[in-house]
Length: 409
Image 1: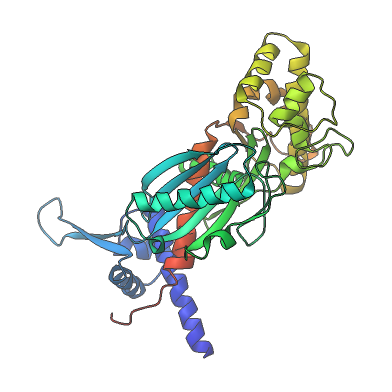
Image 2: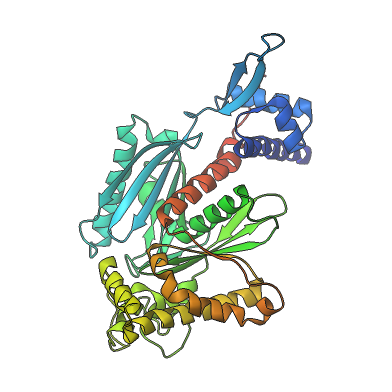
């Protein structure tokens, strides 16, 4: 029994290795898979034959350019093998995307929420209806959607698709497994969106040759809330990511009231509502508004750039608090590049001097080098990119690789 279990585990691992090689290289030949993965030629032959039989891979033949010799055979993902529903929840809408197994976007639409004060029950009903519409528009069956990957701001339970707290629903706990499982049999995941953004940023840096070492990269999201994702380049070539609740780390125990109910969180100073509260000298104990229109923050930024001292101070204080938080991060995780994203990145000129000064004064940084700080304001694109890349890799290793052999090859 032990030998049988061990051989099955090895089979799954080898299948996952072949699939991850194809994600890395694109259409590849048998020889390229063997060279990249380190697997024996016979093992690759057996696995690719099995994956073709299971309709996971397709064989492509290309005639040699000289017109002589054998055609070149390469393998590609069968785009119709499986599908991913990538769903992003934002404060005023839910965005639905359908992605095939090759990573191609097949459909996308957005449904506006009825109200930012919509009840949890109404949201759930609308959410399920939107997911059903996504599948019906493409003529698919629910069983063809192997992964439903949901992303949101807020605190996510470990190991379960449960939203414990978010600025959208406050303490309205939502268990997506419980909501969807009766109809949807695929994997259901829930991830803090900044984790996906961090993964995408790290992947983009690697592809453009900007990062040639194995280490960490921080992505800071500036918005109504403050998010932080940390991606790690592992020696194996994998990129992993986490999203600690950076915005709700306490900066000052007796500071202004945060949306989470605590006092003195980083977000209470540096989120949009924190900047507005400082700019208009609102009482710190005032219950924060759930969301501040972006145009209102733009007006404060314009005043700051025109020399209004109070408006400038609001952004400077936001940068101070973020900078101190990032300095602490560098102290216990080491020096790392930082990418600033989200709508608030458009105001980075008003906060960067404060952020940089606190990072520069960090002891770890003083004996190392000042990390690169870059700007990428298109967080929606990053979140989508990270979601799809993570979901496809997860599907390869935890769904497709684990499919049983038919025994006919």
